[in-house]
Length: 106
Length: 395
Image (cartoon, helix red, strand yellow):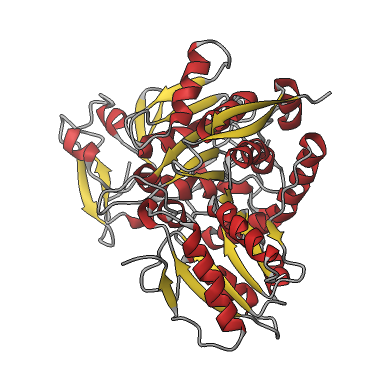
């Protein structure tokens, strides 16, 4: 099934599935949780060896990978914890404070 | 054809039999004191192959109720039992079971809470759980504990309800005393409770769902609580309907409240649990002497049957409410607060006195109950109410 929550803001108490159940799978990506981040990861493509350790370690699965290569950070879900930057063996990831001039993310 | 057999058994054995007949898929329980012998008896049924239940022994009641929550969310019919400190340790999960709308059925042997250490009959444990969102039924004797357990399954799993139910019986007085009771044949109970078909089951991988979700940060937590309130309000009708259906099979009546002599009573005692029987014994004695006394037993504490209580008591001159639990610092004990509140909207209201009695298993002698009726007679005749709250028989 596909759970349509587009009008959830108008739902009354009895419209919600009983007991706060989510009656569908695979929809947690629709829930944007990156809002409390105070710093974001910034990857230097020149230093990156595509070892994918950041993808393995990210506790939020917020490292996007295509064809076995890191393409981007999913900032809708990244919490800015810095685990990726800390684990990166090539120092290719730096944490940049939010709200500052940001270098272009490649 | 329903067939019943008369047994001489303890309340715990009978509740275990009821649970076996309801055939839960999972029972998770802490197997050491303050656990009741209910799960000990049930463990024997499992060991002897008389019931095919996944019997999980865990390291605490906190874990017992956690396991019950998980198993119920997975789609299983789940039952357990506890008592006293065990129920207290389950506190956090009791709210979770109700909030997740999981139809778990649990028996509680009503016993005192520490400190000081005491293991005897008292309603402090169960009254601590009165606001957890569980439906709470009180049994007067082993028979009622048996019947309530079977009815609880139907109530909990009813689509209009889907809430956990606690069936309680008084510690030692009902749990450990041998009582005469009727047990229904297995097939009749099996047919009565039917098969549980969960709507949202974690193990139903063709229809994946997620349980235990977040509803904060402006989310609909408030609305979920409202629908929980609607469900427990709706449960009153279901509790009555299920009782009528079970009465038609077993021949025993079950009210939300059960009155004795209330039709023309001038003075009445409200009680829950085993003490209702003691009160009735004294009431019979006084009726024989021509005193118009009544007894009102409250069988269902949550949802509280406000209208039934008020209807039964409104015509009385003086009413005593017996509480086997404290609500320290409140106007009175938990039952008193409900009964007094039930009468507030009535224009005709009896004088009402709260008696705290029997804490920690302190003996409920018939003389104490005679004293209560005698106080009430005085109040009905215009005497002052004997204090806002009376510790009945305490030194």
